[in-house]
Image (cartoon, rainbow, N blue to C red; front, side, top):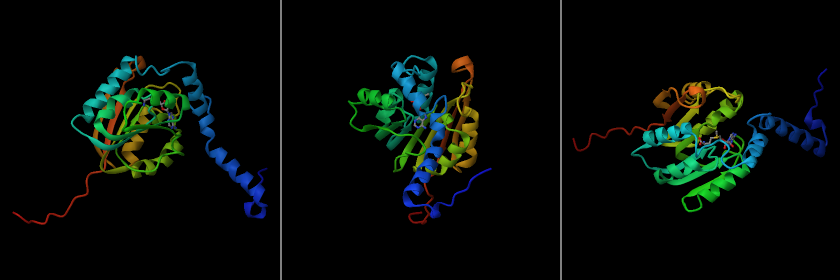
Length: 237
Ligand SMILES: C[S@@+](CC[C@H](N)C(=O)[O-])C[C@H]1O[C@@H](n2cnc3c(N)ncnc32)[C@H](O)[C@@H]1O
């Protein structure tokens, strides 16, 4: 039997209690046994660089490929989602006028801040996406090995906000490992969703075979909002 309670019949304290129960439910997935917030916090507490971003050949390969694809461009404002301890943040910083790195782990953010303290134009913030997506829009949004931690319905719900955070002429850069390590979504599915649902121009979409654990490879996708076309005045012809 299910019990339905009409909230307007309740006194204000009971109403507030029900509302907060609802909001706790919408954050449930963060406490999933693996790869939620609490899991990540424990993971980062055990040792420095638990993902091995400074030592894994795969990470080096993905950073190199990303920097290659961004070559020749400068981004006045950039956002890196899931910046971890700031290893790639430091590499990409010279390409950015302003760079905001966000991560759900307090511990990771603390280490990223220490690593990036010499870079005045870089800020690191603890935030859990999609709920705490910072306001503002950017010329570059980086999502490296991060969106597949979100359950599919959560990612789908986040896409309009992600798109709104991209400025005209901006670039959404996504790269995800294609193997299965128990994460909420597979990399292929994440990229298929980005391509199919964002309605952005696909500038680049590639599978890099053989890289990463078990040689499962990774997918790299660049999506963008083209600059608005201006009517040609015909002057000066
Ligand atoms: C595999 S690491 C990738 C780090 C970095 N992007 C890289 O490729 O070197 C994933 C990072 O995303 C963060 N993360 C996972 N889910 C997140 C969420 N919902 N919001 C913000 N950060 C998240 C984790 O704390 C972790 O630091």
